[in-house]
Image 1 (spheres, each protein chain N blue to C red):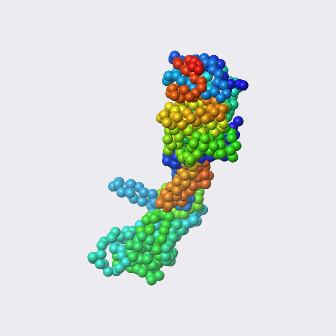
Image 2: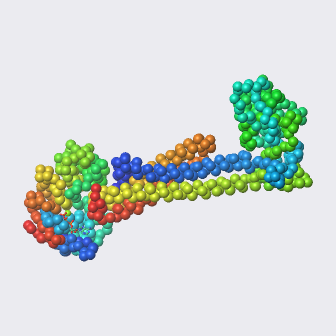
Length: 224
Length: 405
Ligand SMILES: Nc1ncnc2c1ncn2[C@@H]1O[C@H](COP(=O)(O)OP(=O)(O)OP(=O)(O)O)[C@@H](O)[C@H]1O
Ligand SMILES: [Mg+2]
């Protein structure tokens, strides 16, 4: 079976004097159904790696196969398409549109993923019910608690049925109880066969994952 | 290729526009003011030009006045070098291009009281007496006057020196005369004069409205009027130069240089020149208003796109293409621009109409100007929105996301 993620010497260097090598040449394979945690000190290059995995940024060297398909040197349209169809994101800062309802925020992802108009709302509602927010559809994000907002973000990420869920410190803004809610959700999604890569500072969060890698100064090592 | 239909695009754009009404008002304000300024400047230019053209066409371009030339005496007084003949109107009416003519003269009544009652009431307040003007019977045609009631004296009154007068509307009001069917009289000094008409309005010599007007013959008989003062003429459009040339010869064949004629140089051409000048000035003002308004719109649009870079990053992360994101933001700024254009244009028309009503002018605003300005708002929105929208959409999603949300 082709791995979901296969990195071959993937590198990201930021220009400057001197240039910052945020990610040294990195090899990594993530199989379908893996639950990977990425740990490391602040400024070590975790977000840099995740942005590359999510096709939100371009590497300066190496190769990245997504589902066995080269993701570099392809057209911008194809990159966008992969992002829309294969990958879901959960950001530390939620990134919800404050003036749109919870439901609209989730529907937004289905619009860009090219899901049929008739299916958009049912899928968004299903995703929100899955994160136990079926009773908050018409709320606006600013009126929700932090944990609820992050669950909306998770619903948005999974409403398009991606193969890969990428989360950058999803519990960074949450207390231990609400973190627990989000982590339980990840466990459920993982159990359903979704591949997850989660950045975290938190040992408890990292411990929930089955695989763990550590980045220090842009160098990645596999912990388990 | 994810399929984002036009409908989805419009829905997203309308949410972007409508989600923050307070912001929308601020964003629109620049466009509204810019477009309103353009409509007002151009509309006022058209209105003003129309007004001037109207006056030129109606009066100035078709009016001429002949007067005796004057010289300075050694003592420093000005003295007329000649006198106009009493039959001046008949003489000039034989010329081509002259449609009506009338002699006018200020009459010195030597401080005589002018009143509606014969007996002097010493307790009555002493009002400034109305001026007394003598005129020939062609007066109404020559100065384009209209009577509000009664009639003007005719050549017969003039020849016989009948004691009849016509009162200017203002003078009539001061003297308390408002109808003439009962043949009211007024008194100049001791003598009674029958009021036979009231001059309601006039285009030239508006001072007549505050005057008591009597026939030349009467003024000569009663007040020893020595000579007419000026000859008012209504001429054909474009006859100005002909009139300037021929009238002095007709009035003073031996010494034509002693008669001065002021006539419009070449009628319509002058009016056109003035209109052209005004349009240039107002077009320049309109252009400045447009540039200022356009920069304001560009500035606000730029800011509002920059402010939403984070949202752009999010949409890109969710799988929106550059084109989809750029299109949404361009549609938003075009719609906002159009909205501002419409409101601004309406406001501008409103101001032009308001000012005109206040000034008693005829407001002129071309339909193309009104609608064109509204469209212009949309065009400016497009121009101002396209650059930042395309720029922000072509950012790498991670860079846009760092812009914050
Ligand atoms: N756009 C950029 N230009 C220059 N340097 C950058 C840029 N983005 C990141 N870096 C640098 O790359 C390094 C890694 O940054 P990154 O954001 O990946 O760290 P991180 O591990 O996610 O840290 P944190 O845990 O604090 O989020 C840092 O030294 C950072 O300064
Ligand atoms: Mg980070």
